[in-house]
Length: 543
Image (cartoon, helix red, strand yellow):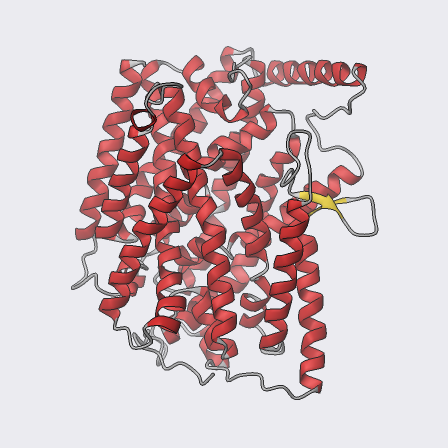
């Protein structure tokens, strides 16, 4: 253990811990006993706070670890994370203000609230809520994986010894996270996001200037990477194996995989409940639109971060035996930075895990409380009971993710995260199409969701890789072709086809379609418009 690096890391971690508990008094409300206050921060965040909150939510610690790790391993397809976080924002600019307006008009807290009110269907709302919770759980677990990688490089996770002592730092970090999330709600990650994002900007900008300079410049970095990959490919060819490494996506079918991954991930990103939670916490529609214009600054940062994977190759970083590419960036910083700045970098990654983990657990708790607990278990739940239920469930979610990571193989969490992206995209027709049209029949949407969930799960399970028989890749051959496509896109196409055909058939049969609890003007309402103030106990349509 490097004492200087650990000291700097500990100081910054304690700083955000104090900020997490102090957040309960920041922008203090009369009471935290409602989901509007605890789960959405009072629905009052402006452009500046929302930029840090949403950015801190979307660009996570695992992103910090995994994106450059894919390039370090020679799979330039991993660079798809950069274009997808660019093309998403024009879509966000178009549809998310409409979701904000209708949610504020009717007091909706979750996307499943909107789906239930729009289609008059508790069943469809339950499907959206369950998908959101199941897709979010492995996402939280992956934040822990990112923290574990840093703690291992920092020397706080010995490779052998008592299992409890080995993971004690992780237990302590998550106990603290659970405590200040319980007391402060969404205000805690909103306040901590200022520190997290500032540190990450600082570390990445310094890294892309300082480390390549010491390696002979970016030209030398790319030359070394190309030579390294060419040697690996030549050795693979000599052994009768396909070449797998490169600095550009493979031509032809490889580019279809790259493009479909970018498009599918972009469509899915703001279907995740934690993304919607950040958006619904804002003050007005204009805040969302301004953030849609400003958030691509994080995508620029992500591009620089991805290139650090190539820098790690050029620096000949050692990532253990057997090799673990996820160690590449923390080890690169350990090797190249002065001890004190390495401590800053480690703190940036760990804090980068705490912020999204807190928001994700709050979003999952909101879904459980509004769309399962209140919809099916306690229909007369008061705002105080809702808040109490959400706080308890947020603890269960966090500790469930902790046990998940510690008790199961890490590859299982990664496989479930792969499935999470496939699953969450299947809520897109019900949510986004519902913001513009009521044409789809509620039962057809439910049938499309079910068909795509079953198909996507089965195909992902049936996709092998050189190292595992199942869940080997997020790309599978599109039916009837030899072209690899992101599994979520294929499942999404099936979803839409079933929903369209089902709607035509069900309308022809005159099957009842539920009551739409919204009005056209709800989708363009803003603060100051008559009736826009949220109703704490909105009247639900008949079912």
